[in-house]
Length: 531
Image (cartoon, rainbow, N blue to C red; front, side, top):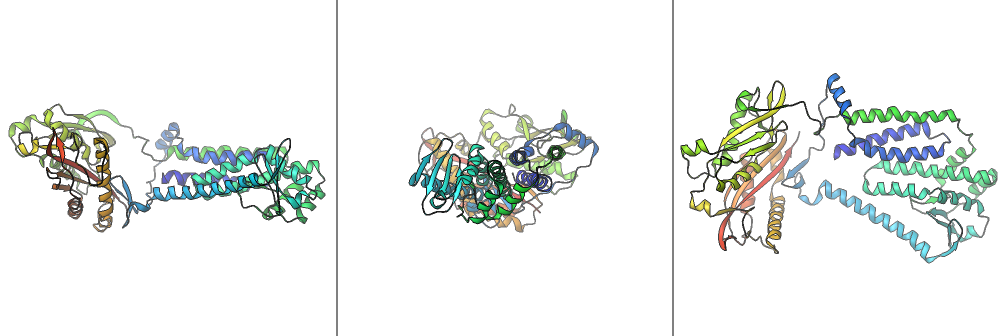
């Protein structure tokens, strides 16, 4: 998302620079109006367009540069974003929503002021507009079909003002301004929304001036414009007759000779500008652009480089062992009895694809009773780096011994949180079984977010990349947390994970077939370490 925003800002900078350098001083006002509206939209659309042919050509003929990672302060904790040393209250998402809320409230407030003026004051209905007379005000502006005029101005010569504002109304200039106003709400942090609105607001005045001067005497119009000082309404989405900062520019543009038709060729500049933008967005490195891959599924022994855990610091010769041990730990920590026959016949098979994701999971060699825990183990596995064959990422088949625990009485009485009939009840939760399940997950996530020392991860000199802490614990028959196990990239992180789970409150025990049972709960915590 951050990269998308940067692209939008870059493209709007280029579009606006092209306008200011080549088009702004020309008298093709309607063309300029179309350019500003269309280019502001294109800046948001182009980053979403990927032309695969362009990408393929560049990959064949040019060397790719390494990508740059921005915002190293961001940490991900379970499904909650945190910044170092802070809780979830002030995340980027919350800040964005806060900005939209404030901008929307200000917009509603300003719109309501306009409608109050319409409701409280005298309205004279004309053929093409509604004239709103404002007592004790010297102002003139229009908003859609409403033309607002101060009573002192109405009592003087005001026909040139009417003609001027009527051009705004007939050409629906208010729609342009509202469009940019909505941009300013959704993308309140984007300064170019304000700059684009400023440019088009000036264009509206040039258009209205040109139309008025055609029908009135030019000298009379500008004499009136210079001699009267109107009040300014502080609404960026209304067309105002008098705006001091624009007076000089309006006179210059109104007295300027019309631009030669051949100068319209300047608008062809947009073609190479668009082409360069599309080439950039199509050729940049993204997750959607896949490397050429081999469809064959390889045995781990056939590979030049074996898959390994993301963030691994081991040498190539040790990565395979580290990966297998890491996965096996998840399986063997549940085992209570180990038999040679079990090892030979019970194994979990799956494929690590070219992106390092687990797929094609085969549970056929695992007993029916053990499939639930097997699925939980698979879901808790970290991301991998794919295996490499002939310099390309390939699919790798892994077979990991799986020793179940179905013969152990204690484990028979332990039910997975995802399959139990009546879930444990976290203090403060109520409702149906499904509502209780969601409430408990939410409460545990909030508890972890508030109590986990997120600054700890930044003091351990961990290698950059996405890291994962896997926690498993039971809620026993009395509702207490027990048998906590944690796996993390550092012992201190494991200890911290165990500490926060121990601090969970006592709950109402889960039930299966009407009897209290132990309930197994898995909790992944994900955070990002960046240089």
